[in-house]
Image 1 (cartoon, rainbow, N blue to C red):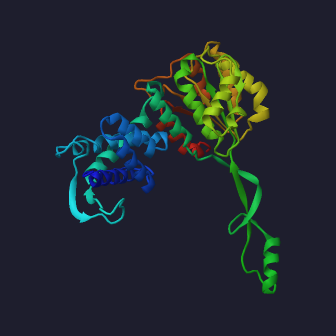
Image 2 (tube, rainbow, N blue to C red):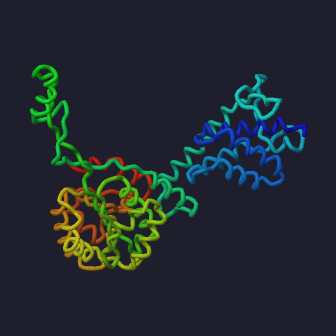
Image 3 (cartoon, rainbow, N blue to C red):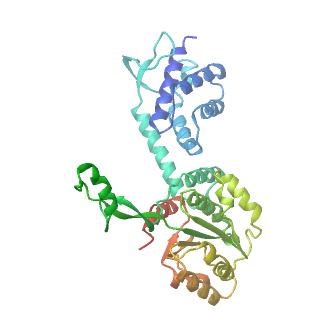
Amino acid sequence: MTTGNGLVGNVILFGRILRRAGLSVDADQTRRFADVLALLGFDRRGDVKAAGRAVFVRRREDRAVYDAAFDLFWRPSTARGAVSSALPRLRQKERPLTDVAFGPDAPPEMDVTDVVDDTARVGASVHEALRTADFAELTPAEARDAAAMLAALRPRLPLRPSRRRRPGRRGNRLAARLMLRSSLGAGGEPVAWRWWQRRTRPRPIALVCDISGSMERYSRFLLRFAHALAGSGAPVEVFVFGTRLTRITRELRVRDPDAALERVAGKVVDWSGGTRIGASLHELNRRWVRRTIRSSAVVIIVSDGWERDDPAQLAREMATLRRSCRRLIWLDPLAGRPGFEPSTQGLVAALPHVDEFVACANIASLAHLAERLHEAVA
């Protein structure tokens, strides 16, 4: 085949573009893609694109970057020949290729600056658009990518001082015994000063999430955020409520987020129903606060504030809960919308007892919360 070297050269270049765009691509993947193209041909563009996706894409979040790179690179060319018309337009140099070769005839080196820049720009814009898109407006494919991005969150946990101490070079209490023991080898002379300093431990976190009908478009993403919190190493308690309160801490301990949400779905019976925030918080205060929520905990309530019961009960339970924790944060998916005002009866009753009111309608807002969660405790 007279165009074999040109095909291999373009496949190598395509692999380099994907690698520079952020994908993990090795020489073996490039070789397999070249073999696949030799068998598959170029009759159907969709088949070629799907074959490359199967070879190069290992993570869901890389799919958008791969698609952008493929569309920019494998575009129609003005070159002559049936096979060349399926290859991209490229500027070529005379310098031979020295780092990768599949046969005795090495393909020429190619300048890929323009294509790489376009691919990186498109990939970055797609990634940023997904970060700032409202959860309620995502397509099924975007929802899968958003779930993967939420699973990758690494929250910065709030810390609290522990009763235990450890030796160090600084502190507020002299470690006399340790200094005496270390000075025995120096004739009783203290060589280094040792101090006792406080250890730190992750502060407990309690997340209470609304799963009523008005929160249906957001609750599953927020439960994935709760799963990321549960896997962060902090003592996390998670509750959900619609018409009743349900503790799902054990169900979220499964490492796989999809399996964890399946276990949650099997336990919770009031999905997408009514909203009884006051009654649910009453159950939380009466039954669970002393058992699971300590006075040093950060409590996060996720709800849009649509209360079906008496708002006066909600105000009383919020005041009780605020006295039982270190800090109380309210997340509302509608708070980031233009012109939003907390005018619902539930929010009017709850906000006087809240330390912080935060939006949570997209990945960017939840990532910002995970980044500054350690600052939540004054």
